[in-house]
Structure formats: structure tokens, C-alpha cells
Image (cartoon, rainbow, N blue to C red; front, side, top):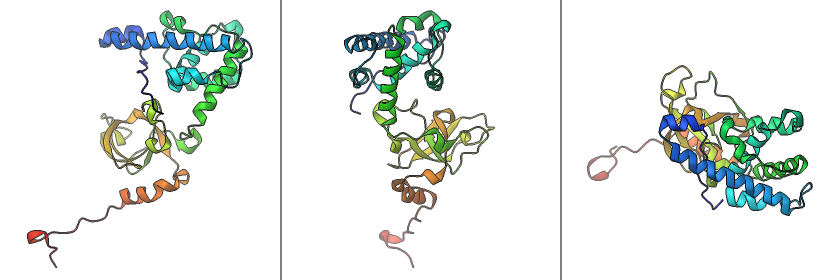
Length: 243
């Protein structure tokens, strides 16, 4: 994906004030409102109650799949209890990381016929699934697990959307206090299996530990190299190997 989309600020307005991050909150809020209005326009232009199969494409291209899903999930959560969404929609919305902020969320609720909103959500979900990101069925939760030597799945919420690929999700944990489930420190030293970049992440940046039976073919040899690095040759005078 070529576009670099603006940050989604995931804390409430009051928490943003406490953190002295009100500008970040405002910028994200404004983008959420614009996204919601764009969804409404796409639905209206698409015919109202039943929409064409590519109705969501323009919105996800302009605002990103991540923000579009965020705005739609908030809208489902904020539906009038008397007009509940279908069970599948409620389960989907609960899977999206959203933090309720009732005083402000209402401004980017999507105001459109429920059948059209559900069709729109279905299209966005299809676009997300087409990216082929690591599925929840392929990994186990981190709770209580020592991460050292494990293949970890980096959360899409951690990654910028332009890096939403399976190759960017798979990391090999090599140390850091965050590897221990009981340590105070949360930092995990990990290496990207694809490109070999080694950085510190927070333990909560990962979704789980990959079941290695799902390890892609491209990653198997690279993981073996990380687990069994070739010894560096000993050097003598002038760079010649001593025998």
C-alpha cells in the first residue's frame, strides 16, 4: 500500500488532555469525522439501502482500511440498543480495538440505513482479509508465555498500514525483560524474520505466538539462521585465519 495514512489516536479526549496530547487527538478526531462523512456519501451515491460491490473502495483508498474499520466499529458499538446490528457485525466490531468516548464518538457515527452499513462493512472486511495477514487461528495468546526463542505475530494495530503484510508481522524474540510474563519490564528484543532488522518492541505490541506449523516457506530457512547463526571465523594477523 502506497499511502501513509494519518495516525489513529486511540485514547479518549480526557486522557489526551492528561497526556498533553490534545493536538494528536484533535487531528485524529477530525480525520475520523471526515471518514464517516465519506462513508455516508459513498453509500448515498451507491444507491442508499443496497450498494454496488466496489462502494467501499474509494473510502479505503482515501482514509485507509484501518481508519475505515475503526469508524465503522465505533458506529456499530454506538447503535441504539433498540436497533441492534446483526450478531456477526457486533462480534466483528468487538474485535476492533476501540476505546469508548461517548461525548465525542457520536460525531463520527455513520448515519445511513443499517443494511447498507452492513454491506459496506462486509466490503471493508473483504479488503482486509485480502491482505492475507496472520489469522488468529494461527497463533496463541501471549498470556503467561515466556517469549524467548518464539516466533511472534506483530499486531496490525502496531504497524503502519503501508506495512500490512505477513512478512512485516513475523518476528523472532531474542531477549529483553518483556519476554518474561512476570517481569516488570515490557521491552522485547526481536528480529524481523523477513529483513533481519532487530529492534525493541513492547510485549503488548504483539498479538500472539505463532504455531510454527503455519510458518511460511519463505521464513523457514531465515528462522533457522536466526536460531543457529554461523560462527564468525577467527582472525589472525593481517586478517588471515589462524590454524
